[in-house]
Length: 443
Image 1 (cartoon, helix red, strand yellow):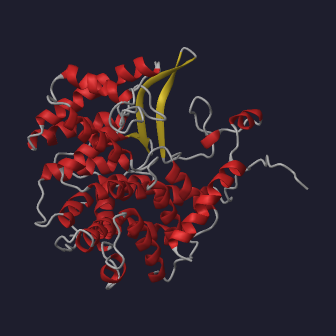
Image 2 (tube, rainbow, N blue to C red; image 1 turned 135 degrees about the vertical axis):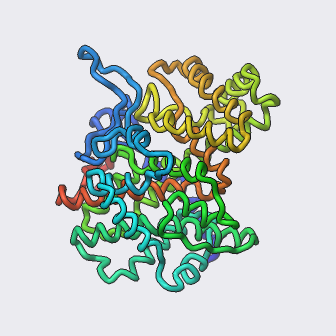
């Protein structure tokens, strides 16, 4: 059967599926079931307990639940405190990875040993790059990485070991090679599909994760310290986020079944690549490019406001009436990651002579919440989220769009690994949610 014949068949079945698989909102309300495990106010159904991280978006003020500036905590420390503690010569990704994985800050000796071991793990099996990554290149780097992760399982003689020490070893090895899987996957796509030059630079064990990403990505392997430090901050801010996000929950579900580390991380990758989860900053960048094309003076506040109003009215950009990068499912007053990142974005923009662009971002950050509140009658608070600026950082660093979500994965695998370890140690019960059948009994 040809693809055309099969497509004709499946197209004919589309309406049948819709008719038989649609469940009305009335039934969800009748049985008290929350779509997407979230109630009508967006609060998530409590599905587990964790010591790894915490999100704060409301506080009790005289017995009243009151929106507050957002907070993100890693293992008992505010993430902004962890960043503020870094000296101007330090990179924080590795130190924070140790904290998330093991639950406590490393001593200088422990940090040195941890970084040394990660450096030793920055290698792939012989001919893996050629035979796996270069074979069958894809524009979808997340799919390429997932294929590589599952293939790496075949090189591990302890792939199905249920011991904790084996799990920790596998997680550390994957954390170490994720930048290679992502960057090499992009170079394979860029060479074989875009007909660009091919170059494969090996990582240097003594460098930080952020430095190695830029070194492997660029033809000349050159980067400034500011560039690497800003990328390091972005990675720190994306490492973990409360445990209740889709990909982390996926990690815990697969782990609870007793499956292996590679399968759990591959499943998380499949979740993260979904546009409702990991690809939000790409949509922000598309919107910003559209604004630049249609606003003649990016520093003219009134002109920017007029075009944002067209976007929210569904008369501009993609017609969906959304200003991307604004609002968050959990945070209301502010996203702490965005507030931290903004100061670093401004430093990088100055170094890259992008002052006009940062002015445009500032105008949108100030005016978009007002427009959304007025047009959508949302008064609980709308603020920029971390995706509003992260894509701009990647753009200034010359990172191709195809690597935006893989960079998210390079950071978030640390959180996934921490949750896998916690699930293995503390739960010992398969996650098996209940579904109520509402089918018609036709006999």
